[in-house]
Structure formats: C-alpha cells, structure tokens
Image 1 (tube, helix red, strand yellow):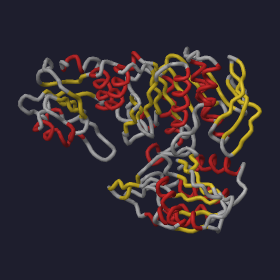
Image 2 (image 1 turned 90 degrees about the horizontal axis):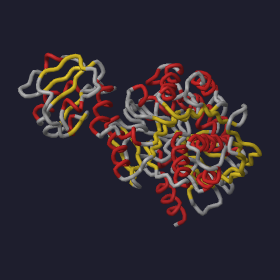
Image 3 (image 1 turned 60 degrees about the vertical axis):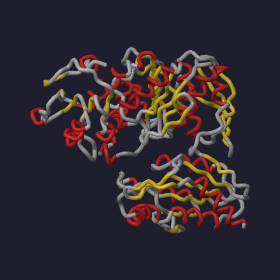
Image 4 (image 1 turned 30 degrees about the horizontal axis):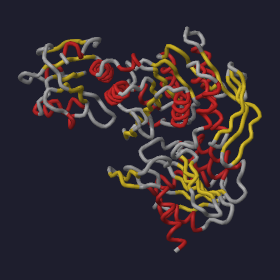
Length: 489
C-alpha cells in the first residue's frame, strides 16, 4: 500500500521524505519490524518506541511515525511523519492497512469490571443459534475462524485488533464480539472500530494502579457508549450503569436496560439457584420464556440478561435467544467445576477483585453444605489498595482461607500475602499462608472433608504464573487432578 494512502485521515503536523513509497507492513514493536515497514513509535507504560528509531531504520523500515523529537531522525531514505498522538495514529494506520474491516462487520463491545468474557461467549452462542457466524476478541484469547489466538491482553493493541477483524471478514465472519477494557479505551486501542452495540456490565474497584480514581475508571468505560450507532445495553441495577444510562439516554442511539431489582426493559423473575446452574423466567419486549441456564449464581443471570439485550437489539427471535443461552455449558475459568470424582467440590474462577470474590462466594453460600475453603492471592505490581479488601471479603465468606501467590511479578510474594492477610484478620482467624500456590492447592485438597467446596480464585482461564519476568506453566485443572491422583496412589 502507498504510504500516502496508509496515513489517510491522520492529522500530520509535519513530515520529511517521500510519501509515495510502498509500505509492506505495519509495526509498533521494534523487534517485529521487517524491510519496507512503517514503524509507529508509542510511548508505553514501561518503554518508549522513540528509543528504537535507529534500530528499525537499520532493519530496513521505510517510514516512522513519531510524536516527538522530529528533527532527531534524519536518516537517509527514511520518511518521518510527526503527529500529535501516535496511539491514535497506530489505530488509524492499522484500520487503513486492513481496509477498515469493522465498517463491514457487526461490532459488539462489552465493557465493565466483571462478566465481560462470559457475555462475549453467550452473545456468540445466541448469534450462532440465529445462523450468524461470530468471532471473539477478549481475555481468554481471540476466536478467529474457530481458532483461539492468545494475545496477552483483554483487548489487544489496535494493529492486532484490525488484523483479526480482517481475518474474520476474509473467512466470512460478519460479526465480532469484543471485550473492551478501560485500558483499551484510554489508550485508544479501539479507535476506528465501528461499534454497533455497546454492553455495560458493572463497575467495581479494579485497575486503580492505572486510573488512580474510580471516577477516572468510570469515565474510561463510559467512552464506549459514545462510539456506538445501533444500541447501548446497560445494567440498570449497577449505580454506575444507572449513571451511564442517564447520560446516553440523551443520544439518538437507542438504549436497552436490563436488571433484576430496578425496572428494566429486560429482566428476570422466578429465579431458582442451584449448584449446576440457575433457572429463571426471562422477560423481554419480545415476550417471556423459561430459561434453564448452566452457569450458577446471580451474576450469571445478569450476564445472561446482557447477552439477551444484544439479541433483542439485533432482532433475533426469542426462540434463538433461548437456544443460544441454554446451549452454553460453561466458560473456561468462570465458575468452572473440576471433575474430581470425589466427595468434595473444586471450583476454579477468575475472581480477582473484592466484588468478583463477593459475587462468587455469595453464589457458593446459596448451596454449600460443607465448609468453604478458598485458595487465593493478589497480583503483584497492581492496585495494592484492593488487597486487604479482597482478604476481608474472602474471610467473611469462608471457613478456611489459604492465602498464596497469584502472579507476583516483580513484588515479594510474602509481602503481597501480608497485605491480603491484613484484611482476612479483621473477620476470620482461620487462615494459613503458603507462598507456593501449588502447595497451597495441595493443602486444600489434603484437608478437604465430605461436602466441602474448594474455590481456587484468581487464575481462572490462565495456564501460567508470572514470577518476575518469567511466564511459567501453571494450569490449575491439571495440578488438581495430578495431586488427587497422587493422593489416591
């Protein structure tokens, strides 16, 4: 593609060099630059792409986009383009390079603190029940034409997003459901994605290491609902959801509300909870129907209602919506019951915030007949203020707290544990600390009694642990089954 076509729509402050040259690829990671590429220098949270301009020139880059130090990069044959915001430039260039794929697709964005992953899979199932082929971009990975591609972020960088949308479209996939994180909205990863529908789940304390305040966090999330063209679907029971609903009700884009407690367009009644799921009557503008949902808990009802809202917005029949919901047997790492064939139950869940833990443990409270044992920790180099809150939440609901590691990264795991235990101690003295997470799981399994429920919280779908700069294999499903096998032997 010609460089002048690639930068179409950019607000170029100044440039030097030839804009008519051919560009063979786009990169924002200097390690992935090939000859003839355009490199976009991004100021990251840990590194600055401007530091690697000479490196990419030596690799054969044809052009670079910079946000500063324009006069510093006068290399022979290198076209240098200066813009105000290189993140915005990367999103525009990526969209142009792949032919603006989102304009030809039905785009659904899901944002909020909890529930995003499950909702994307529920919407996908509803779409497929209505014979709409759909892809996913999200935490577990990007589902592109039936292949799960790991990306490392809930919402990947704009270049990756546009590439995966292009690949979906090329294979005949006309719908994409995307988890849209607050980081992605704030860092402009989803700029030039033409969202038809936005879904809001809830907002609770998380990511304050980045956003600093809940108001900043809220404002980042709210951006999605000013990017949509077809419908905004909002959880009216959530206080932040109510704020968004009020704000976007003034827009021309239709608003659909959902909830259980407040008066909403889509709501659930006659709810019956049990260990393997939840039954309820679904009430919608299209009518009512009984739902037998295979994921337990009140939070699962909310997730289902959000997905229903998307189905209603897309004019999918109530029959297909029901079929789509009921065909989902579960989502990896979301209240996932491990088949142990023992007289106690092991559940794996991604809950890693005070509210997420509260929701999962409240669900377990509804059907627990034995003790509740929770193995959990808190991530390193992340919001430290939520650690004692997590400890207090787990301590309040559990009979035995086993505080351990959870992706300590560059922090001392023992120091993180002490932060968590400070909260546990407020409400529960029955706890142990075990730094090695595998040993913590083993302790829980070895001390389990009949009818106990063991919750392994925080890792969810992850099959790794992050210690300093190393990503090491750690699949809790395999670990549980391996420990039980050895215990049996």
